[in-house]
Length: 276
Image (cartoon, rainbow, N blue to C red):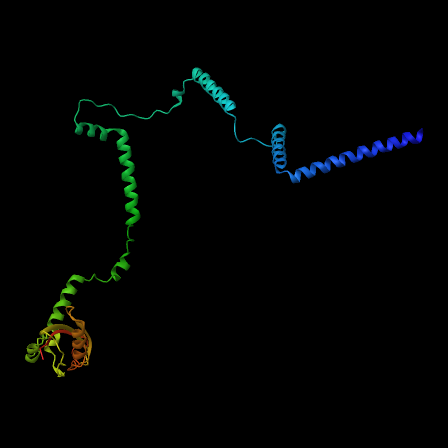
């Protein structure tokens, strides 16, 4: 009998141990195999966690329920009404000076009354003081030299008179403008180059044209007589401009004398292309 009781007790203990393990196994199998069960469990765990945090005071809810918000507003309004009934809040407001009302007068009289008011005078006094400080900062007073230092100060120079004298001297020393040469005038040269001798002038190359064309070219000549730049005064036929440019680059002018300013001289010349 005792052995049978021990066996029955052992079986019962084994059943009690195996049953939870089997139940846990089924629970884990359903948890991993059924997605809906996982979602419900997560939501339930989240709700339990939030409620536990609220009950323990570990988590404060940011959103206030509408009913609680309404109750709070009613309490605040009631407290403000009770405080307003006991004390006049207007007595605590500061009093600002107000100008006297002027009715039935002209604009000039109102403006005069405003300027005569003590408030306007105070503002004008402060504004003048501010301007005086700014003037002192922008225009500081120069130091007053002593008698000894004042004797050493050189006399002031009249720059205007000096400039007039310089202009008169330059006009006197400036040589008379050279006259244009007859050959250059016959070629139609204008500008400072009209008074400069031409040492070498090759014949104009022959170009087939349907009508007679005249191109005005501008050229710059170096002090040694070499042509430096040639450009057309007015844009026209590109091919004729190229021929005229190459032609004028072959010209040679007389070098500038040593007593003359060694600078470039310019001039304009018409180039005529005639029918062949």
